Image 1 (cartoon, protein in one colour):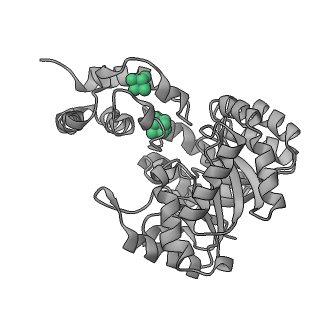
Image 2: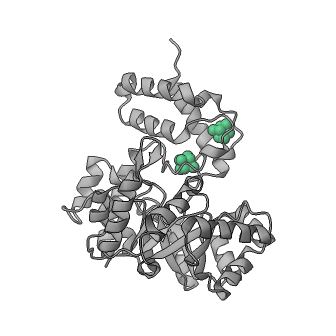
Image 3: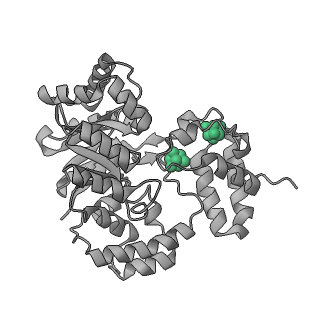
Amino acid sequence: MNKLGFGYLRLPKNGDELDYDTLNLITDAYIEKGGRYFDTAFSYLGGKSEESIGRCLSSRHPRDSYMLATKLAGYDVKSYEGCWRQFETQRTRCGVEYFDVYMLHWLNKKNYDLAEKYNEFAFLQELKEKGLAKKTGFSYHDTADLLDEILTKHPEVDYVLLQINYLDWESDAIQSRLCYETCVKHGKKVIVMEPVKGGRLADIPQEARDILAEIDADASPAQLAIRFAQSLENVEIVLSGMNSMQQIEENLADVQPLTAEEMAVMQKAVAVIKGATAVDCTACGYCLKHCPKNIAIPEYFKLYNEYMRNPADDWKITPVYDNFTLKSGKASDCISCRRCENNCPQKLPITQHLKSIAQAFEKTE
Ligand code: SF4
Ligand code: SF4
């Protein structure tokens, strides 16, 4: 069993530039090893993700050797005609005639209302009828109750893209399990994003590693995290944002589904991991473009997590923070406008965390 999809979001880089040589290599290796499913979106990397699909995938591999999914930034289009304009840009960027899966990006209450206002579900159907999208769906970041309402109103979609990993499985904020069960109830196949929670589940405390070793002592924490999502019956694809050959090799290895007992063992590791992490940020960067003070939110959260694990290391962490503030706003520059919080898929209390960060790193002598 391997349901691994290639998420074109966290792509390999050389400094600030995308590393296309590595991206070609790992794209080819993924296909050679039997991988088929690529996932991108209009907004990923400001359009560079879709352009990379054109450059590294569609111009170098036959169209029937891969499946391609992308997403409409429906929260930005402002009209039905706007949907078409964005779709045509996507086809040009990606260098394809049709998409295997076409989704509305990031439905939550606010974006769902916009999707209804601009008839975006009708747009998905029109694409399907014209053969421009083989299957349709949406990515989702809100409660299971709202998901139930959407799927009741729109039984025509094929897929829901959900954030699922063993850390968020029982989370009140993310509601992974409840959302998954809602999809099962409506007979919808699930595609999984963030199975390793933005890399967080690749680097877990030793105590949590020891717990996971009870399941498979040879598997890495990241492999086990991906295996958790792959083991769910209604899950068809598990996306992983891979940027190295090692990740391709590891993640495409043949895996056995976890048993219910093994999944229960994983839940024992959750308390340990949560206890060792002050801020549950996945470094997705969605908050950044909304911040009027240009605060390097995910970078500060990463430093703060290191600091909270080892407060005695503040002598080496604080200078790194100071360096960031030369180009970015400081944590104390936050004006609590909460634009970041409204765009954080993890629903983090960002403003509150920034106050703690300012206290930790901006001490005056
Ligand atoms: S609340 Fe603070 S961090 Fe968030 S967008 Fe506003 S200024 Fe930036
Ligand atoms: S704070 Fe939220 S939106 Fe910003 S990078 Fe972290 S998880 Fe993503």
